[in-house]
Length: 461
Ligand code: ADP
Image (tube, rainbow, N blue to C red; front, side):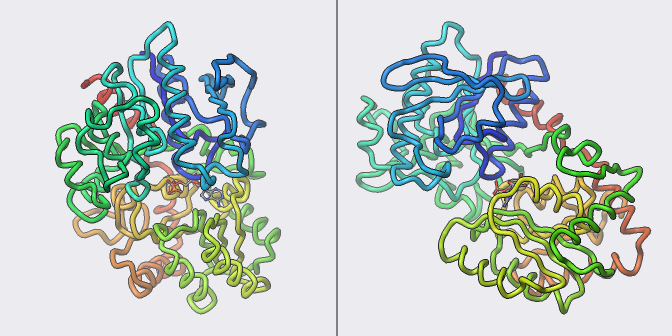
């Protein structure tokens, strides 16, 4: 099967968060299954060129050009558009909407002039959601929504200038002069999905749909939830290239050496407290007030906390910079600000627990990674976190199915209660703690099952 993914991110060439991991993981899984897979993304000035094999100029197509590279056996095509994507980061450029719509147009033009037509064009998020309007039904299109918070509300003329008559696409209007690109993806793809079953339900029936509930109900039979996976070759504590000590569920002991070294490097005290990790974008979705509470209370509540967080808006940045200064010499708190893959991997490897207090979470990958690395997740019970983290005290579930701790109310008190239960087990029953770690490590959140579900989705059209 010939499958083309078109997206804003792919790890490790261009990654901000989970979208990059998912596009990479899916492309690799399909490629390993013997499909002809390629990925098309913009040629960002900020591209991580070291991560791309054989990056070379491919074709001048006026006014855009195409570059080609490879990652792990599949091809990535980069669309270079003069004057677009020139900033130091992937998102947040002054002409972000216009740049992504231009990208969508040229990516589609380029795909359509290929001699071999793809069996499926798989689009991800609002950045490329104009493509069904350009394609007008000529291709089999699958759309995946990774987060309903980002919808791409766009001036009509940004689409109309490509000769699209928006009257042909009822239902995508937002206000008088604007359209909603996610509505276009939902209404004019052949199938549309989001990234967990619970988030799909939340989006259909609660305010998590962010105003798109009716649009989703309109295509109900064509809308589903498919849980993300993680790439088990990349996220592997037995081989992780960033870690000096490796371990598996059969021998977790070396994890202690990682904790020792991380404490040494970051200046955290060597004490008997459990080490709790956070790796996150610092945006309201991720439960910032709960993270700051956990940081401020670390000393009193008996754990250590180590965080790698990327903040984008100035207010959040200065909030965490203040905390960083306040706790600069604290024996139990270390805050790193910025995107740092190596540190993130150390945190997954070295930590005993992992905190994810999200207000909403479409799927969440950090709990899947922390499970794989034996760092027991403590999460808010929402979206994909609810589908993957089974609390040890879940009524009717045996301990053997559990892998972490969860809480429901988005309040400090509810989170504290979950943390207190985790601390109680950590201190009171080390054997059971190790069993919990092991159970999480041995559960399968690889792409195997999910890739098959996507394949079934492709074949159902
Ligand atoms: P989201 O896509 O909403 O940011 P996910 O949990 O789906 O959240 O995916 C987050 C991905 O980004 C994970 O691979 C995580 O390790 C990575 N990540 C997030 N923040 C950072 C950071 N500050 N440094 C390094 N990696 C990060």
